[in-house]
Each structure stands twice: as C-alpha cells, then as structure tokens.
Image (cartoon, rainbow over all chains, first blue to last red):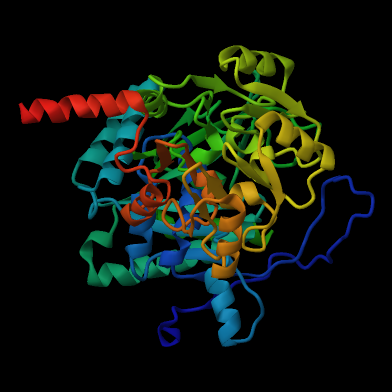
Length: 281
Length: 245
C-alpha cells in the first residue's frame, strides 16, 4: 500500500565528477560516473538482491542464505538496503521505481542470540568453528569459542555492496544502523549486543614476502584494525576472480580471503567516528 | 520427477548444467551433492559428463544441444572439445560454432524437434543448428526479449517461458513449437527460467529456492509426474506388483 511506505532517506550523491564518455572504447581507469543512492528498509522484493550480496560474502560455504535473507527482511526497523534514486520528487511512480530497482548494498545486523536456534545461524557458527580450526591459533580459537558459544549477546554485522561503490556510502549506512539498534535496544533487550561479529572480504599478496592486504570495502580495514579478535581464512579457488578491483592488466594477482572479526559493541561509536574521518578525507 | 538441487550454494542450475534426452553435461568444481543428485537419477540411462567450456563453468549458458547434437562456442578449447566428443555417445554430433553471439545457451532454446533463436543470429549458425541438431529453426522473441535461451525452457513435452509473456504470444509460440507452454517462474520468482532450470523428457532440476507451486507447474507442463524412462517404470512396476501379491 502506498500509505505504508517505509522511511526514505536521501544519501549523499556519490560523486560530483562529470560523466566522462570514453570515445576510444578501451578502459583506462579513473572513470567516474555520478549516481545518487538512497537507503530503504529491506522489503520482500529485495530478497534476490540481498541473497546475491550475501553470496558474494559466503561464496561456497554451506550457509542457508535464503533463510538469512528472509531474516534480514523480517527484522522490522533494522538495516537498510542501498538503492538507486530516480529523482528527488516524491512522485508515486518514482517511489515505485525505486522499490523495484536492484539492491546495490545492504547494511544490517542479525541478532544471533535471538535466532540461535535457526539453521542458518547454526551453519554460520559451524563455518566459523571449522575455519578457525584450520588457522591453528589456539588463543584466538578459545576466545572465539567462548564468545560465540557462551552467553554473550551477539550481533552479526553485514556490510555488503557492489564492488567499486565508494566507501563514502558506508558511513551514513552504518550510522543509521547504529541509531536503529539503539532504538531497538529499548524495546527488545536482546539487541543490547555485547559483541559484533563480522566477516570481511580481503585480498592478500600471492608471494610469501608480500604483506599487502587489500580490503574490498575500505572502511573495513579500520574495523579490522580496531577489533578485539580476528582470524582469516582463504577462499582461493572459490571465487571466480583473483584480481583486485582496478581491472587493469598490470594488476597483481591477489588471493581472496575472508577475515572474521569480533569486536566489543561499545567500540562501535568510536569505530564509526574513525570511519567518518576516513571518508571525509 | 522434478528435483531441487544447488551448485555450490547457487540456485542457477541451468547455468552449471545442460540436460538433454541423450546426455547431461555438468560443470566441474561442484560439490559431490550436486553430482550425486544428477547421477542418481540419470546415470542409469544417459552419460553424465563433467566438462568446462573455454575454461568456464557456465556451460549451460555457453552451449546448446539436444539428443542429436551439441553446439559449443568458438572459444571452447580443443582439449575440452575432445573430452566432450569422447564422452558423449557417437550418435551425438558435437560441433564448434563461429558466432558473434557466443553464449549459445542464452540465444538458442531447443528440444529434439524445434529451436527458437535470437533474431540476430547469423544465417550460417542457423543452418548449422538445423543440420547438427536436426531441428526446425524459428527466429522469435519471448516477452519482447531476444535472449530466448534465457527466458524459455523447452522439452519435447512442453515449455516454460518468462512470466510476462502475453497470452497472445504464448499461443503463437505454442503453435510454432507444437508443445503446450506456460508462463511461470523458477527459484522463488526468478524470471530467468533458462538459467534456473534444466529439463528433459523425464526429469527436471531446479534450484533449492524453487517453491512447491513453481515445482508443481514445472511437473505439470513438462509432464514429469510419474513419467520416466523404461528402467524407472520397470522398477515402479516391480514395487507395485509386490504390494499386490
């Protein structure tokens, strides 16, 4: 029903650069296009888009992503999906167009404690337990075990978007998520998280001496550096590409990894501040 | 019988496999679960061949075939072509096609008797299709979309097309193809039915997200409930007689 439209928040335009049309036909990097995105509450029709984004994170892992997408949609008042705005008017037709448009990103949190009986949360825990065993770092393993399987309130932070959408967008999305969680805490105590769990997409250099680590979402490097516990696992061979995002023939081949992070929930505001500073520069 | 499967957490079965009445191609690199579902149902009757095309796993969209033949794009490696030729029965002619629209599975939809092709397909390719696959070729669009292979799935018994296909188009296509058609979706509302589903005369495989309504539409239009090749029929007969005696 048109009357029950969710809140519409206009987010900063992505780039103020002019659209540069390339006559030569070959891509030479540094091309920018202007686009306006907005955040919307996740809705049923976003199911496929959300699932696609979760798939790029989990690749071949045995986690029921359909159920996870449904959970994200069902959490009323938590999380936003990133959609393209058609123009700034409140025209009925434009609003509908945005509704049906593709999902470019999602920023949300899953209340793991509340849903811990569901198969997809159990799959997620199994995945983490499985991968952490391979990392052979006993200390981190015990910490993760204690936090994941103990009686702490956990939220699984999801921060996914199409590759090459600038990290500028993450600040408004994460900021509104923080506000929503804050509001939800008052009604539902289980949202008063002790820890946030997050999985990041990263790339490491192929050769042994190469310590270069690139994060798919730049702001996640800040979270990774400020977190309490973390480990990484390789997803080499499970994704369909081994290059980083610059799409040039000179690109080095990097190996895709996933970084699993745990950080205390009270660190979230300071992490957000750092992200804000990062994106403003 | 219609089954729900997943290829490495992905519901697009029509991307990673190609199913006909004479053979089945599956992409390499999948989990054992995926193969065992296919092989369990099919291996008794037809060969299930693991293959790649041009080093890609999206073989369902790159190649097209029926019981008479298989067409692969020009980008296919010689080794892959050789492997496929060796693995398939001699009655199946494998042919490499020089075609600008190289994703043959997206631009051609066919069964053992007719083929629908992209309106811009080369004349030469059309002739190769008619020759190798032994079908009558029609240039058509489905729901105003030229990617007929993506939006239409055909078997000898019936066909499933893009949900927005108008009734008039449905009737026209149905009379052209001489099979009943229905407009529907697969994988919980996905319109790209060609990517989500593979089907032959006795089996269909759809993604795990496919709802039971979608699956029952598939079983009814492709006449799959209870149908099967002779070996399955005889097994069923054996259990029926057992229960009567």
